[in-house]
Image (cartoon, rainbow over all chains, first blue to last red; front, side, top):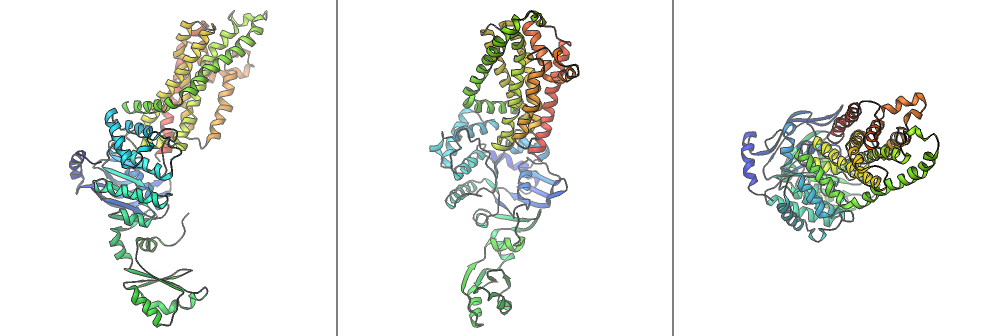
Length: 324
Length: 257
């Protein structure tokens, strides 16, 4: 997907400093009185896979829409590919690929027609466009569906078509807003595989997701957003190191007996979290902690020792409250 | 401008899939109207001794010249409603286009240009039918086409602006029920508005359709217009350009908040 066009990126980047494709300082988005994004700072480097994680309503999509230059910045500084979204929107969008949260395909048209019409918006001409469509259909494994209408395609196929469409202009940056929400596990893995290949070709990926496994699979670096602010930033591993422990022990007790044991475990882990149905011990060594639990004469119904995941970090940072 | 033309091109490619149905409608509906209202009803009216009220013109020619404008209105209003809401809400093709270098102004201008194409096609179909049926003279009806197209745009653009703020399709049906249909019936298409009760006549003057009917009738069957033709044209152009401006403003608010 990547070609000599990247050479043109560099001077602009140099002007914006440090080879960053996107820089935001004090970036703010307000809708009337509602603050959707509240003075966030971040930079996204060339070739990086960068994630925005957060619960619904955290401000991820609003941030993405500002980067995609389809939503005006209320306050603060935002540069995309060294350009100003307010005045250079069309020039920025010419070099972005966007996979929106909801499909925006024309379901009455064929797969090929959807790609063709979209390519024409970028001013890509006949033969080049046809060749590119062939390549992209092959890349997203939809070659046999070229002349099918879009409507009967599965959710996974529609997503892949949307990705192919987003790549039609050979973008420097691919923006994906919850790319795998609503897909079955097989479809998600196919999609991840394709995104991973794009990353290897040097395409910068910007992804929002609330799936922790997706973030761990794809992102080199991510920020966690909560209530319009960035609450943490780093690689998945660094975030786990910083906000969680190496391992987690999950203890389940017989119904009704959990409240009697909580206080006996206090000193067994760095952090203890009591949930309605189980107790979590955050510790560097799970097996030692399990040994200590047994030494105290406690017999949980089940014990699971697992590695800490981004989900632990996420829940710690954004809480377990339910957001609708 | 280039970007607006790309929006026109996208519309044309979509239309390639659906043109057959709309072409049938474009030819069939004037045939039915002219046969039923014009030749059927007209034969009674024309045999009435007082038929001089239409200046000696056959009733079918009288309404054909008005229907030309009304057809353009109908096409313009339809194009400005469902396809636009689909782009915003159902198919979301407007969202897709705006993720590319296309701007809201390109999107609106391009879509209005496409609507002008659609209005032209339906007006031409009407002209062909009325000429074939011998209801209107071919050259004269050709001369009336520009006025008909402008009439169509005086509806397409404001209806687009309205659709841009419409929540759902019930708001669209309301336009047809409370604006388009009454105008169709009472703006001079089927009878001179002097026949209306005195207090209703000024209402007819305000409707863009009446101005379109006046212009089409003047070109197609040589009636004198009530106002200077320039005034009629200016009034229609005002609706079209105000609609164009508000469509951009409203769509920008809705699609790029």
